[in-house]
Length: 340
Image (cartoon, one colour):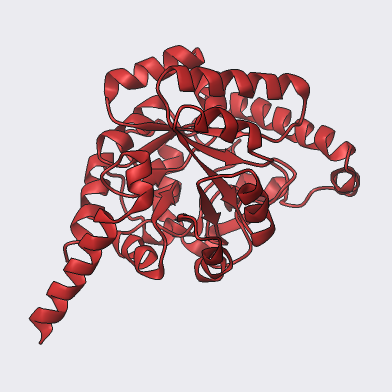
């Protein structure tokens, strides 16, 4: 009886992978995405996840500003590290005309360089969908609740990345199960983003109905990520109780590790900033201020690798991270879990 049950579970999980629409669309072996991370999406990490059978996603601001690559040359460098599919993250909020024009340029370059899978965030993705569908590519849209999924559906996206309340970076407010239940009726593939760092959690997400997972924090604590050792060790040592929301990075709550620096700086936006963020016009300027301040802070922290001057983004999945491993090892453990 027990043996038969195990065989049935194995067949069920094998079927999940073979019939996985997202994996087929992305052209990958395992439905695992390395989420685009600022500043942690260095080319070596992105390429390593793709080479190991998942999908590494390029974060253009990280690639160009943080890691110093010309965007096209950065993609070509990654192509030297892997011949497998790469994705790109397009942050499409129109905070300024100059920024929008630069994002359009980056999307066009990525398409020219053969990227065919895009993740859109923070805006209406219609123009990205139009360009990507013209070359038979796919667009998945980040959502934290049903209303954003509806806007993505109106733009004809191919799927959703459901960012739940355990995610690092800009976390949602709903649990993985609640968010899935809100989105399932749209009948598009949905990926689970938040709270995934172990093979068991990956398997549970697939059993819940998700087509795959997006992972960030677990990949920061990898050999290929060039984040500081202090950052990686902080992830390894942290528990989920150490994860707090800070409004002082982008103006929108961001999940970070509670460090002495975060405690000193505070996590709440001031009264003037809150007033600015409520205005339809002024919120763009306030968010731009936060973004520029974050860039200045990044420059300072790069000169001081101790982490005393930095915000370390991470999700509550830190609970399952106890060591720093090569990406290939992390991915192999995920693959093996499906056979257990």
